Image 1: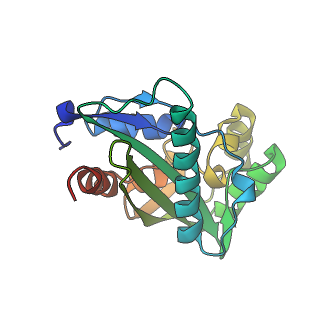
Image 2: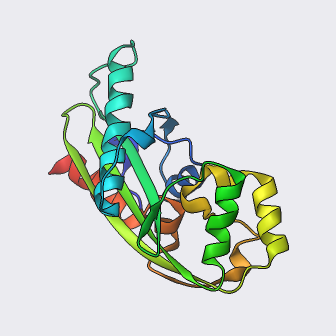
Amino acid sequence: MSTNSSAFTIILGSSSMARRQILTEMGYEFTIMSADIDEKVIRREKPADLVMALAEAKADAIVSRLKSTAQFEVEAHSTLLITADTVVVYEGIIREKPSSKEEAREFIKGYSGGQAEVVGSVLVTNLKTGKRKGGWDRAEVYFYNIPDEVIDSLINEGFTLNVAGGLMLEHPMTLPFVEAVVGTTDTVMGLPKALTEKCILEALWL
């Protein structure tokens, strides 16, 4: 159940359709701003460190943009900015969004009959107080063998280029080949619900 949002407003700092869907499912109303940062210039060795650094960089970019416009006003109620990032780890290697259809195909063929780990972060910034609360979560996805024709169809649609590791769990062509998820589906989709709720509460009150 969502926190009573009448006392605050939310900005989702992401253009991800999956994150919009999850936040809506949580019962929140929100506006959307995308960070538009160059994620490739931010590098960390550990997946958890990388997704936290990227969520922070996205928040910094959006806050900076808001401060340069008339939108940034100190209001009677708090405004919370939610940013997030997700990577896929396959055989110890961090995978972000595929850079081409060829790379997306290589990624998905690798998952076929195997497994991948998904690491996702959430950062909630209270724009009124400047307080930030964040964390990360992980899940493992196990796959049946994915036929080449299904992989081709996924690639041709183009959606795989917009998601970490080319992994779009919620896609109707992907779902039949998911054997199991250890962890939560919302973590795989890019916004862990329980962690997001916790960070919202902490950014508001702690």
